[in-house]
Amino acid sequence: MTPRAKLLFFRVMAFVVGVGLLLLVLHMVLRYGFGNHALAWWPSPHGWVYMVYLVATALLGFQLRWGLGRMVGVMLAGCVPFLSFYVEHRVARQALAQIEGDEAAGAAAGRVTA
Image 1 (cartoon, rainbow, N blue to C red):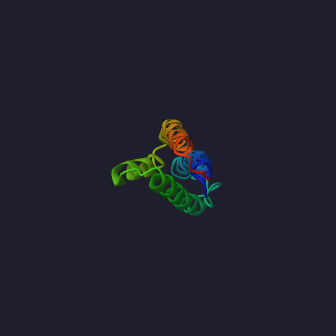
Image 2 (cartoon, helix red, strand yellow; image 1 turned 90 degrees about the horizontal axis):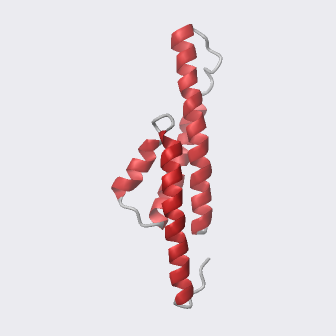
Image 3 (cartoon, rainbow, N blue to C red; image 1 turned 180 degrees about the vertical axis):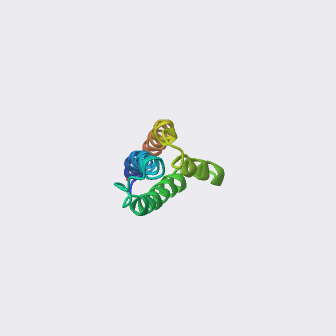
């Protein structure tokens, strides 16, 4: 998997988890505030989607040589409503700059980058 593919995977999963977290909050408001169980099916799939987000974050983090603290911080951002959208935007911008820098350094050294 190329670094750009890992970045795209992370961005998609961050968006999906962000939307999923908002649905989870809506489920909790409906269930505990109004006794409505319309979204009672959502918590379990949300947990699985979050696990895929953790994998996407780890793949990107290892590729870009992040420290453990940064990786865990990005992973935890997926637990706070709306924060995942902000963190995804910042991380994606920084990661793209690093990927482009690595590609330019590889091209200058005459290496083929995949």
